[in-house]
Image 1 (cartoon, rainbow, N blue to C red):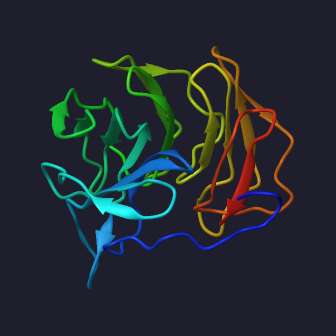
Image 2: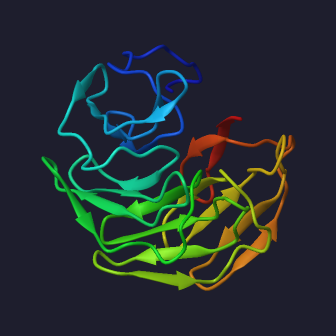
Length: 209
């Protein structure tokens, strides 16, 4: 996105949905997800340089509906079908199994870095639990006020927004994190689920859902 207009970028090498992802517009990754018919999990991992996608070393275990955060040099893939607790860390070249999350979940988003990040909500059933990662261990922190699946999360581990999400066709609820607790703030104009977006707390945007 630039100058108020959307443009089509390079296609993925392997099409999939419900995948983990992280990074920026010119340096990002996608990993795992659901591919083919009837939609089985995959180990696929690809990196984007701002124009094209390149296959990288695969995840150790096929996983779909996973979440993630980090950068192309240091990423996290966590959880997935069916409410698994598995976690893998990426060092820029390889994926390595890491300490598991406390609450198995799928269909969630996260923010932050490999040494300071968190995952928010998820399913099944819809969850309010939030877990923070310090580079080694996962710790449960303050829950969301409204349990939900696939809420868009933007910001950092000290200042974040959780907006929209399931169940059903979606909710308009937005909650703000101040490094201590979640507080409900101004709702979205349109309730939605499975949204995507990004930015900081003061400039965050939902772009689809």
